[in-house]
Image: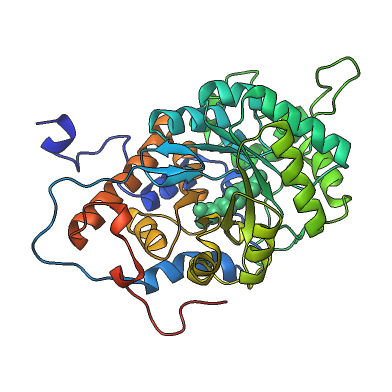
Length: 404
Ligand SMILES: Cc1cc2nc3c(=O)[nH]c(=O)nc-3n(C[C@H](O)[C@H](O)[C@H](O)COP(=O)(O)O)c2cc1C
């Protein structure tokens, strides 16, 4: 009998659910950092609905006739993944000294794909080394020349695809207050943050005496003449570039997709699609995949939960592009529900950020294992042998659930 099966409830660093990982992250992190991961915008309607909507969907199980073997591997974006859960790109991973590298190692160890934010704290070269199957994510920031340089850098590093995230509206307010983010973590900032940090000595210790969290964005560093990259901008420097870049048109989307195709020839994903008409425009722009997403509720508050938007979009374009979704996934049965409504795979954000904050690489692996175990037991309960058998009929869907 494996050790875990002897008594799986024995207290240990392994956590049993994403909610427990979140509780541990909350306990471990200084308050402003925990707040940065909670994120959300305005009154928090969308961030709450992303999770609440999953709870409105039911599953109809069979009592007997289940399958002893079940499979959840699938080809996503041309890559075999061992479970239909990918790492969504997120900033803020400097909450752990290994940040995106720890997440990438975990994704690699568990047989899935890493999404790396252009606002990441680690350079794309290091992250691809940790997980060769990394998708690089870009916002529409800077001019076209700068974007071409960034795409070339990602291609040269070995990225296996590009995620263009376009849903962002620079909303500044949250009813529960925003955490202070210093320009950089220097002595002055440490003194100011001291009251929230001194109570978390275990968290601080892992950075060592000189390695305080780095709040720069190395993947947005400017190219220097003759090759190479200049100094990484601070988070706010990078944010300023983004805020002052005019928003993209559909022609810009088509340009970005074509430019990436010319540079790399690997898949192009448009993330942040909420409408059927936009999904069709994305198809016309030539994208390979879309992610039905509201940025985890961090963007335009009032956007419906991503899972409510999924089925109409998957029905409209699912035979032309790969349809992914992200937002609110916290358990294996959530993944099963999203797949039943037409997603090829889901992406997770906060779930793995809680794991990272709680226990580094092992914590992210823990989260992926929770989701794997949850998908497997949901399939077992439903009497299915594969995620390929999931369909809308697997679910109990309340009237008016789907939104388009
Ligand atoms: C703290 C935080 C930072 C994020 N940063 C990015 C980012 O840099 N780029 C991006 O495309 N999406 C970003 N996202 C959105 C995620 O990729 C994803 O869409 C979202 O987290 C999914 O919802 P979930 O957190 O409920 O899983 C971020 C989300 C969070 C919570």
